[in-house]
Image: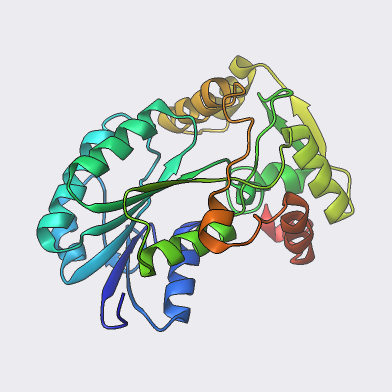
Length: 279
């Protein structure tokens, strides 16, 4: 892709999107951030924002909010992909979820648009412990989740961004699906233990029944749709179906995926898991 071409990064202020933006701009490429909170206004729920964001765009990094498992996501992804192709943005790279039937429906809708599509099917983000809903529990010293002994190949968001930047800017990835995982399987208890060791402080992991977890979220004022999504992920997706490794990072980048312990060490060095300001 030539440097004069414009790439739209949806969710460009989020965990993966902002990293994709950094990598593309670092290559001297022009980038348009599509977001509800920064860059060009873009809202999945407001289709009037889609066409202006796509104007003059060659390629799109598609990160859907709140999640591909949300009701209506396949129809929305399909409609956006068709508009993107009509607008001249044929290269579409979708951030998808591993083991989610709804995500597979979104992938099919993307492919049906006629785009030069690529799917990045990612496992659970390591950064959920430092840039998302698990940060406060880690800082507080107790992570309470309805996850037992099932193992997950946590993937580093930096690996996702490296892969996305390559796929967006290089040929040979059209029609491909890449499974993006870390290099080993960990239970949530083992992941928290690794964070505890890296941060040099005691952080407990407490497994609870899913109904107890849902009630706690409701008591904290978490919206029902978010509670429903989280309980779905922990009860349906985290049932062992993803307890195997993918090699997408190696396929695209020619290097191994980053290990969770490296993520934990680097993140601990920032002080975010010990700073009171993080709560």
